[in-house]
Length: 594
Image (tube, rainbow, N blue to C red; front, side):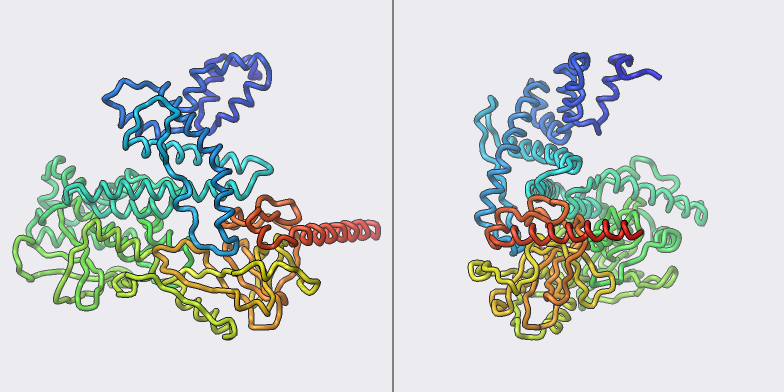
């Protein structure tokens, strides 16, 4: 078996050239011995950097296609901006430590990074460079995040803010692209493209490719065409040119390309294929968590699972029908403001004869439609479709039309009302609002006394009306007498990024704690329901906002949280150390008895 020392350099180049081999891996490889240093030359490192910044490179080439600028200038710019990103991030985090209240989950990172004019690189500044700079940041952070995971010890807060910045930049980029999209002629503003923009915006860390969505829709159209051939082999569509199919795929069409009989045959075939053979079904669960909402309301997930929000299934049906030369609109029907699927034989007339309008039922094919009658309709186009999808991600079906949607929602509660009643209220209106628990005026709370059993950073379980007793870490507490400084508030879910809160306590005269749990929730728990438990890593998306690192026995608060509870870190370290010593002695004693 040949060792790596005996491999030809060409083979080593191929191995090191894989995309999953990082620059850090290359540097480590060069440091193994002097014989490997000459293998990795400047040109090879240049190739790895081009792999590292693919989005930025694509945009850079597009912006400079008329200019004579090579990859060396691109790498020089990229290295400068990457250095700026890494050097500036700790400073930005410190700035947000000063203004961020640790137990308040309101959004705070949207303008974390300003894309200022950079004069340290020799190129003429223009309006396009901000886009390229953001692309560099996106590519660089995307590569940084796995590097955090490979490290045995890393700063949780630093990673957290990198994730928030990455999500923010990706969302911003997709919205820029969407604004360009809706400025295009109406005929190319396709509904599936609008739905894909929404899926990309809502899943910033997932690569959602429009090409993948269109490929699936193309395949569905081809399968539907094969089904049509089996039942209606003489249909005119089989003599249609590829040019027409290509046009229907890329453009909205103004009218049906078939007479009433042939149009009806295509519609019936589509219904049987999509709702019968593929078994697409609308989601009928309303009060669901955020991750499940993404699964049901993003077009890439609905195409994969064949189950999701009704309006997404309409978009899929509409997109496949258009590829077959059939105009089939998604409309808002009045009265009732219901979203439904609308078709008529000819759109160049005002005749309502043979019009079909239906909504998807929860029954199986062929009983999967409810016929709908209306006195007025409004056709949903791409821009409005994105607005509706954005609203319906936050709300349940059709709530986007309500008047209160135009203004933020706020709910404050009286702590002296039984918390059980409030827990019920929150569960009922959770689909429409994000709820946040915050503790105000920390200067009145941070003086500890012996009656406070737990401290920030301790790992606990709570057994409040729960069988599985979720494990979590404490991020805040208050005495009963300070309950007036506790606030539970709700915000319009379209604009809020609050972490969902859950009340797990009765109203008792005891200390209350806020914990982040392993099932990615924030819980508000009374002291009598908490138990110190075996230390473990807590997988929660907000962990880095409060803690710098995991010590194996407890979490260490970052500066913002430590400022709120200055005495807790020492208490946590002492208590967990005593618990560890006791457990070790117990196991040693048990082993001796055995």
